[in-house]
Image 1: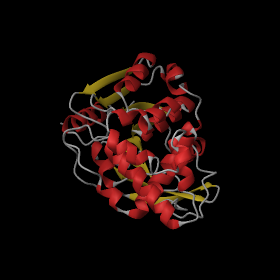
Image 2 (image 1 turned 180 degrees about the vertical axis):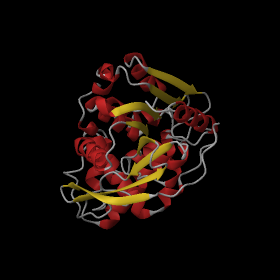
Image 3 (image 1 turned 60 degrees about the horizontal axis):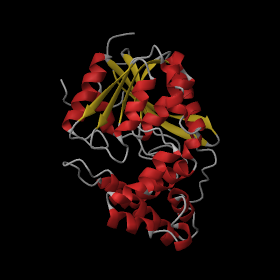
Length: 320
């Protein structure tokens, strides 16, 4: 109980045509006849890595993973500056999830997501509650304009020198406005050196504002210039538009989740996604339970966070 399950390999995978010229990579692991669960990765732009499979008992779950539009193994890849992002929005991703569910002939599935994946999971569940059995979310965020302002500006009070370098990565006239918007424009610049510097500056700040967990280690993925570019480009694209969601709607309409059991697992030291986000959601969602992990920050790396997530998926493993 609480330890990651052994590594497993997919028993099936493919590329699903979701329209607009996009093909999304998907895979299924575990028991083909097990309880369906879909994993929604973070970012946007992080992609689904093999470690996500290990939060589920492979004997009991049919684990579905996919790379969201523009990242991971999905095509076209947002690291290519010629790839336009006009057909890469939250509403496109919600439609993709539904298309994947139908493609795999799944009626209802458990939603599992962290960070940006928690926003996407909430939006999907509120749009399609009839197809959701349970929900497990960690490092809960709802991608409001207020949350984005907190991460890109207010967190400078915690890491002042690092934030000053992040702010100064954009032209002086843009330093007093929406920093996600300013970085997004730099990442669309025709000069590759401008794009590469903007991606590095953005990802350096990303690795800073989550560094409150005493056991935090810098992400090795940010050493890859291709990953940096796709990650920064997609995050800033989504953040400049506040995920195309009405401000506060995911908490306001959490009553739509009545009857769907939920586990919200959040680090008490997560100041990039402050715990009050998960707490307010738990107050509005009648069937949700919030667990705060005392020494954990943002993400699932802390041992106690892992334990809580495994406990949640084990609890929900029985058919519903």
